[in-house]
Length: 136
Figure 1 (cartoon, rainbow, N blue to C red):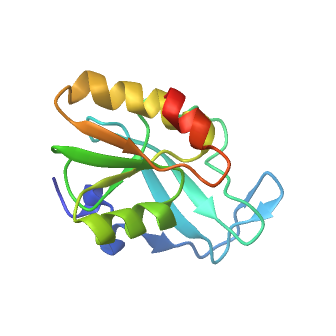
Figure 2 (cartoon, helix red, strand yellow):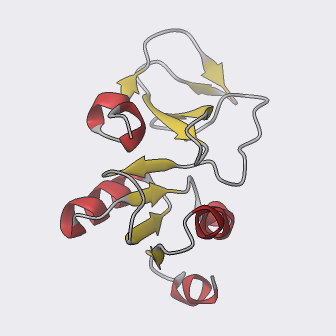
Figure 3 (cartoon, helix red, strand yellow):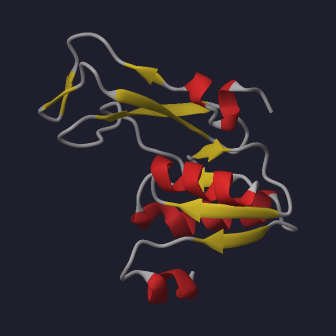
């Protein structure tokens, strides 16, 4: 997997320009790429101080995610956001998958299981979502 798709810091950028999305000014936003599991760019998320909008008019595919810390192998951590992904990957040495929100974790988990049936998924929920994580 290329450095660009591994979620390494080199793949992230800070946006500079006049781009409002859903009322959020994106100048200075951290730009997070969202890829399919096949490596196709699906969208971009702009992490601003007031929200995390995606490019308008783009529907994320079920397998849309950002993989941090290398290719999916034996064990992979599924998390909501990029901060959790970097923490999980750094702490374990395993890749972590940014699902871009709790509502997408089940879909991304299903897509990973279909593409990587031998991978062991570890879902890392936010506090209060442990029962939902167990159900997934």
